[in-house]
Image (cartoon, rainbow, N blue to C red; front, side):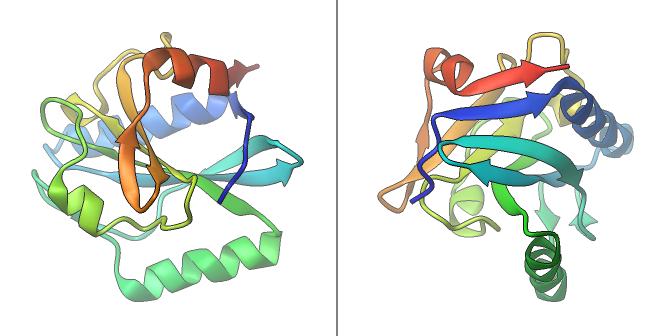
Length: 156
């Protein structure tokens, strides 16, 4: 289980993630990303957003198995870990049964963040306009806004 008390999220990474999502969203396509970085004791420092090769539709995305393997190889090379997977939905943000069954991140304690309206949301509110789930006891559990705001700190 990932035992993290604080996640440092640079504003530039949040901005870059939503910019990429909006590019896909202009074509009415869902999109997927991963936040990666370094774990130091109980703090996780997000260093990069990765946008893997993916096939996208209005209602789903698919990352090929070989690209999932490449993600793991690249994580190992950089000595990074992944903390969160993110993806968009065309309307409301929620974790669907497809999201539950086909998650890329499977380590207990990982996060899955769903962004509504193909990413056409404000990033000024941090993660408040997104829904955040955490993998606990083999289930994606919705996290309260209060818990998310205590855990994720937006940095400059």
